[in-house]
Image 1 (spheres, rainbow, N blue to C red):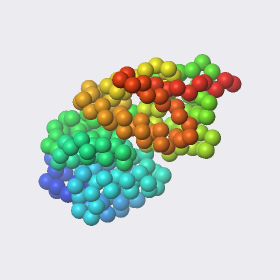
Image 2: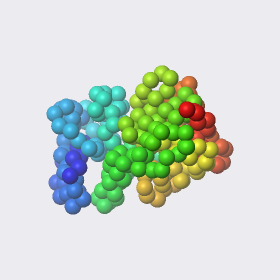
Image 3: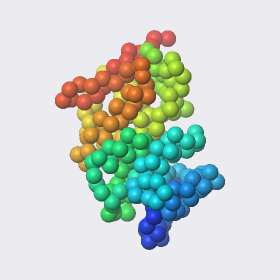
Image 4: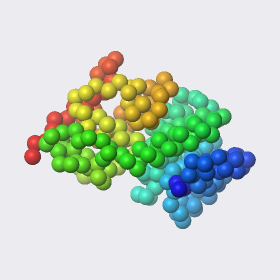
Length: 239
């Protein structure tokens, strides 16, 4: 049973959604204000957050920023943002702030359940379930010049120490690092990270890459190939 926290000021949404998501082994708790959500998060563990973009007290984007900058145990909680608008600008802002996925209102409950399952499966399994990428890497650890990816701990380290990445940023880096030199198109990356068909929103990949690059500076592991996509460009670190 996965525990979800819904933050949405539409009180009529919680009841039907709770009943529907229970079919997929989700236990939903609902609050209508960010302050109430912070209290819940401080008291109880949750596996994922469903966050509305328009809220009283502060909007969902500000709340997402606060969570990602908050306590360590909050930073890795997957966040799926909801909005009454399918605006590209809202999507970009949400992803820049650390949201893991985005769904526009009105939405089909089945699509919400599918996206939650994908996010949680990605977080639970991670790249440790994939084949090792480099022959010189110890099982579970990928080592490159200036960068180390520990799949067993879902941890990324540079010479500056452990780098704080969201689950989606980590999955993007691990995906590219498992096959150094291979060019992934934006659509391929979307499909691999989300586990479902891309919805022509390839700009999301550019945002994720930009965010990842900024966090890993001065290391530059991701190379852009114009009109083609992205690839992992760091040489392996020989033992």
